[in-house]
Figure 1 (cartoon, rainbow over the protein chains, first blue to last red):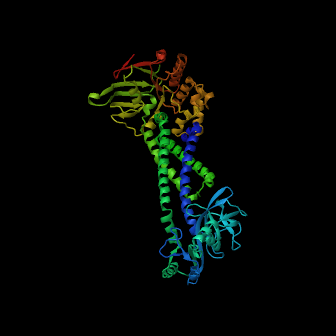
Figure 2 (cartoon, rainbow over the protein chains, first blue to last red):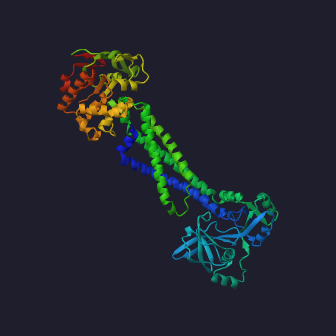
Figure 3 (cartoon, rainbow over the protein chains, first blue to last red):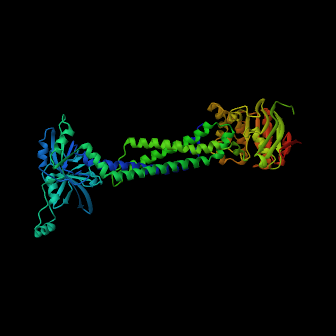
Length: 377
Length: 230
């Protein structure tokens, strides 16, 4: 006879409510894990998307993500000619705000050379850039659809394709356009501002610079050696893909990551305390029944089983409810919530461990109860 | 009444709580013998040691001194001679409580069969035995009902069925009729007497209920931890 299940069935509604409460707590824990992963994943998305082996940037900078970097666009040709380089492409990054209908969109504009590294990794709807000007491939999260038009700077662009999971470390969805459009967008002023600049006789902003040159190396080439060769040019710096990723995580997202990580730790501690309290309270409410069981001859393992099984069912149910809820709502979060199966499994392991440890308090109280209590004195 | 086997043999049992100035002697060299088929009432004012003696015979409380023999087995002689007292209780002793103490999450039938389950009976056999007992105690029609929906009398009869489930030969009862009206109290006592005879068991009851005194074979009195018999 399974006493734990019988007891649960006896007060099923209350148990379900408790599980649901715990489930909501698990939803928050999973959401924080997802946000944490999302932050890292978002930050790395722009770095990983070009599938580059090498990032050539302005000397003595850690660009183009950790700090600004500016190179002459012609650097691409110089890099492409180096031994060991398979292909290279110039690239620019900038964040802009644009009106679309009644909405103000914050977009991460990536300018790249068609047919060279730097474009969207996949186009899930529509097509890639087919013309030299005024076409966009946008991340689906921007809310733009294929066929939509949007004014960026002085020109109107048409969305020709959609991509996914392309954004900057702030979560702003990426917009891919040709390098020439992006450079024009960077340098061309609004007509009113242009008139003021012309009247002042100031120079035009330099439209011939790019943020970085990305390169893919030949399969038999040594990336470190190629990077060292590039660094010999005093005006250039070179970072491998791994260095660029490390740099981004260490500088751009490190604080946010630690903040969320700390909050996640606090949340897990709170969950552990809540689980312990629930199990302890459930046990304390049953002390008289436990005394009766002891009196009629129930061994400790029966009492232990009653408490531990209920704790495990509670933990597993709370976890399942939490996981179901977060999977239902995760796409409604303003920033990406990335949950890997391993995250859910590790949390399950932690919850089960917490439940077993939390049962300890209840078990201690249950094993200490005097069977004479059942006799009423 | 024919004298049956000696089931409870208490010799020189003492129990004190605390030491020095705070020492309280709950029991002083108590001797008590109860035979199979006997129904014995234990009377005494509050604090006289009734509960202590009942708990000692029920192997719940350690005696400070003396010897205790249950159903022919010496279980305490200056120290417990059995390691697993819960198994001893399961095998030899049935308890009936003042407030019946049925487990609220089990049905009447499950409350009886849980004892058999603990004793290692197969579920089907335990269920049959529980149903037989409930039928015998005329609450078989309430087998699937939980304690919250049983009347006081029904609940007490289920509690008696639970106490008898594993066929213990020693039944200890603490105010078993306190929650019942006089008619039901008489019925419960008649039932216990019948069971004692049929199952060759003995019944030791703590009670203050004067209206059932005539249902006992013996009344024993405890005063200041000492025993006297009427």
